Image (cartoon, rainbow, N blue to C red; front, side, top):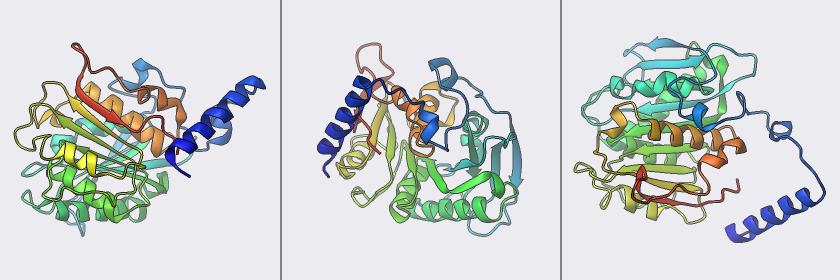
Amino acid sequence: MSRLAARVGVTLSLAAGLTAGVTAPAHASNPYERGPAPTESSVTAVRGYFDTDTDTVSSLVSGFGGGTIYYPTDTSEGTFGGVVIAPGYTASQSSMAWMGHRIASQGFVVFTIDTITRYDQPDSRGRQIEAALDYLVEDSDVADRVDGNRLAVMGHSMGGGGTLAAAENRPELRAAIPLTPWHLQKNWSDVEVPTMIIGAENDTVASVRTHSIPFYESLDEDLERAYLELDGASHFAPNISNTVIAKYSISWLKRFVDEDERYEQFLCPPPDTGLFSDFSDYRDSCPHIT
């Protein structure tokens, strides 16, 4: 079925439901929803609904350079989706640490990793992201909190290139979010994972014209995808606490890792790209039908 036909079907089904007065709550058919219904203030908050704690992973672990796991302390709602986040070239996990509690407190187990060396190239970082996913699900101290069927990947710069590489290699992943990504490979048409690419308008390291935009445009047109270009931002925007990055990353993870349609409102319809917008460009596959 084509994307257009599927969307027409969804629209007709929704219309029929409204006509019949059917108002079943979303959580009735989705066992993965975690936390209360979202609001603009909840999805932009520095801390979300869940209290969180951390666990340190030694650099002696095999396959990547160790890291820090951030996880919800309350398990009464069940297991959580897992997210591995990789840093950029020459950077350490500390450059992505601001995302740890912020995303975990929204109902995810988040693993910010160090790479084996700070000079590892994107494909190596992709393999290390995959090793970290396996560790998180199989060997970590919080493995019992992670749903191994609901995993996602994120990364900055060369870590963003590694994110694309990991997504290409593991089609079973639920979401990928490359942040100002850098990679020599420009064609990612084999990626089957819902992908949100976040670029920066004034990026002089991984120019959006030669990286983020070609990456996005190469993705299959039937893939759930989005491209956000941060207005006036530099390559290093993801290394500092950023409400816009957090809001859209959390919404993407919730929508595709948790299948939580309550977060669709923050993704579709797409935001404005006018004079006072947070974005200099925004492209998407709205409405999402998966």
